[in-house]
Length: 269
Image 1 (cartoon, rainbow, N blue to C red):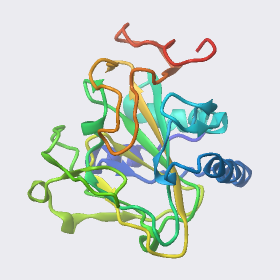
Image 2 (spheres, rainbow, N blue to C red):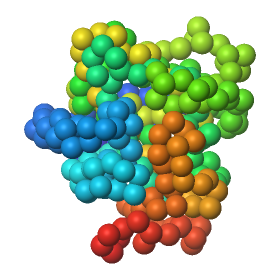
Image 3 (tube, rainbow, N blue to C red):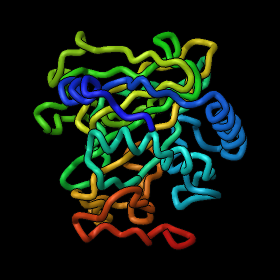
C-alpha cells in the first residue's frame, strides 16, 4: 500500500504540509466526481463550499445530504496509511467536508487556523485535501504559510461579518507574513496534507472553472473529541453540530478511553 517516504514525513514536520506522491486511481476519482455532482443537486439551498459531514449517507444533523461514497474514501487504506505515518497508528475519522467553488462566484476562504473551530483537546488533526477538479491559482487553490504550525499555538483571529467568505474568522494580518505564502496547485486526484495549526486559506474563484475538493479530517486517539466544548450553531459561518458528529475508530485503540463512537451513528459504528 502507498505510504509516505521519509522525506515526505520530514517535510511535513518542517513545513506543516506536503503533496504526497500518491493520487487517486482514475476510476475512483470519476466515481466521486459523479457523486459530488449528485449531492450538489440534492442540496440546492446550501452553498457547495459548505457541504459539511458529506460522508454521512442521507440528510445529517447539520442539514446536508451526503453519501457513504465519501466515507469509503475517508476509510481507504491508502489514505489511512499515510495519515498513520504522521499522527500515529491510533486513528479516528471525525469529519469530511466538500469545498466546491463554482466558477465565477466561488467564495473566498480567509487566512485561518482550523483549530479555532474544532473541539479537540489536545488539539491534533491531519487534514487530507483531495482535489476532485483541477485546483490552480486562477480558480482559488489552497494556499498555506509554511512553518506557521511550528509553535503549536493558535494565533489571534478576528470575526468578520461577510457574506462572500466560507468562514467568518480571519487570522490577524500582524500574526504572520503573507508574502511567504505557497500556492498548492493540484491535478484532479492529487491531494495535500496539512497540520491543524497551519495557517491557510484560498482566494475567491473568479475564473469560469469550478474548483472542488474534499477535506477529510483525522485525529489521533490520544486526543478527546469533546462534544461539550462548542455549542451547535452557525458561529463559523454555517451550521455545525459537534454534539451529534459521529466518530470512526479506523485503526488502533482509543487511547483516551473517553471518545464516543456511538453518538450520531444510525447503525452500530
